Image 1 (cartoon, helix red, strand yellow):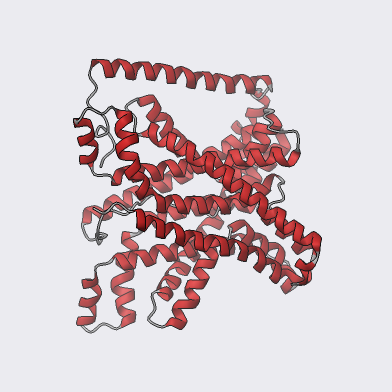
Image 2: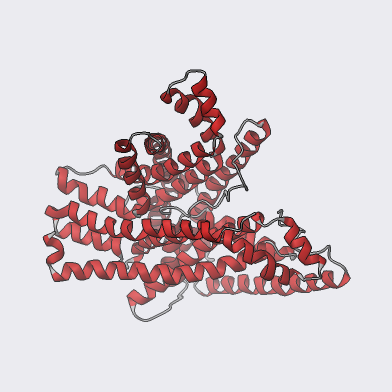
Length: 291
Length: 224
């Protein structure tokens, strides 16, 4: 059911009047809230030009924010590529006909999905060096943590996608003499990946946000450089946090609209398999391991 | 496992998970209440309410929780002087709950909205045909049916909330991940058992919870 205009009648004169009153009342409340925030900022001197000025200076961007963003994206891209590989391998593992493949793959996926990402990163960064007696690279601590968690989530997505491919597809493939591996790699996975594209991309949004956890183990990403270090120099933590939030929002909105475009494109081509039964609740991606 | 035979270490472990439990409960209640309100706003006939709901979702869903929690502490508390309690831990706890609730509410709102989309249009049309108002249609016809479709996604949101609660450690609360870090630093010879106990606790609680939500969702699913 499309939500607009099904839940309420076309407004008549009384409903229009009521809606206008509600609009005004809520609008005034909202403005009051914004004004309250403005005053609170004002009281604490947060509108002072000195606090905002660093953000119109190129040096702030070139020394802190852009390198931070670059490190964030670096970790996100490497982790995304690795998670996709991890996801496909373990999804196929869980769908295997042999219990000795299925079982360990299931245990790994369920375990890493249930463990908080931060706990995982702490173990990799602070715990592993005690075992290997070598310092752990901070970049790889972040990337491995992200890969294990998001890869497990993607594995479940791929598995659901493979199961949503109509049976006739694999039956037809077997009928023309394909082997198990061929059916999986040439028939099922491509269709599953296509059907699950929106889920995959929204998981990548989660992954980008999760790179911010690297801040906690002092990886030089956007939050560390763009907020912590900028604030250490200019004493403008609130302003720096707002700027960083806007950057995250822009990056993730771009990814999300890319996902929307992709899913419209696949739908139009009519080649993506239709999931059986009522449409699954897509878009309710988990709020990150997280983020 | 001798690490956990020391009473003080057990204490660290227990306090850590007690904080996680409290954060999950308080944050969960806050997120669900806020999320339902936001979902109601997003489908309402009033444009300002709709815009507010949309803005909330787009802002908070796309910002890392780490940044939100960080802002709750350094922005709301340190700079703007919002303080919940005099006790440092308790104050950090409520600041963390604020961050978790504000962030998770965006996801709850979206889950409920897609739940509303699973209710056939005929239901709302029939309700309107017998003269129900928007509020009656929403609360008596659509939301009860949407609620059943929402159990599975809501379950994964709550589970994610529980895992996300570890992030409140950023602002100094000794929750489980900080507790684990402390124990690892003090007992370098028992790193793996420590990790297995902490991670295992999450796995043992959350994996069955996930299956329970799945089972419940199946049981309560509207058969159409």
